[in-house]
Length: 335
Image (tube, rainbow, N blue to C red; front, side, top):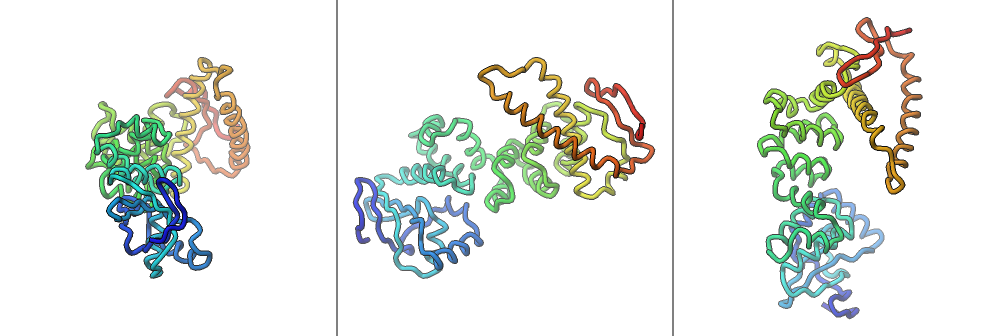
């Protein structure tokens, strides 16, 4: 290595990408398409963001940040490339620096962060609280990242690595029993569930009083199970349709059905909470309430524009919802 700039713990230098060890944890965040994109970008503009390399006292080096760029440089056959070289005294320091850099650079894959957290904690030198302080994160953040590395099944980890499953959903799925995780993850992706829907279903699955039949329904048909859960909890005002009629609906229609059902339940719950939860001077609820008010007005206008287009049929009524599970007033359509 030829020294370019000096610093007590780091320097900008030129290194041989072929002699720098891969960071297997960071490699989880990189897919083939991203490497190809980096290759095209470097060829056109050069290496604008130098990778970071950790160097031990024996001269061995390992990638701390910029794994994608190093993979691209190797494929391009570059024998030297500019990098930030950080001098480290112990292998454990490599993991700590990788994790800190990943949070600073907003690494694309939280699973990598979780595995780095796990490796740091396994040294026994840090508690979860200390890792959080080190990164400027909460203990809750550390726990959630750790759950991705320690509780998630390999098949579900792959979905996170491929960026098909978001970290929030994966953290919820990690709370399921191991045999149920993969089946539910694939069903959730197939039916396009939101992260909040995933969280709701996982919570329902894990309740002690949830029957086995409902648990199986959650794993196989999560969107239908979600609608059933919400209807049973808060409203029975959704127009009645037979299972055969629902089965004939388009995916977008089924999605709208479950989302509207969930919306009605949430609105009813919020109505019950509102009298006892008025915002104080220090609360941010006021702004949130204003946003909800504006959004509800827009959504009401959109619904009003679509209602004349509906052909409800004889089984459809417009209803007013009272107490959870009870219809106060039923108004025939068209009145």
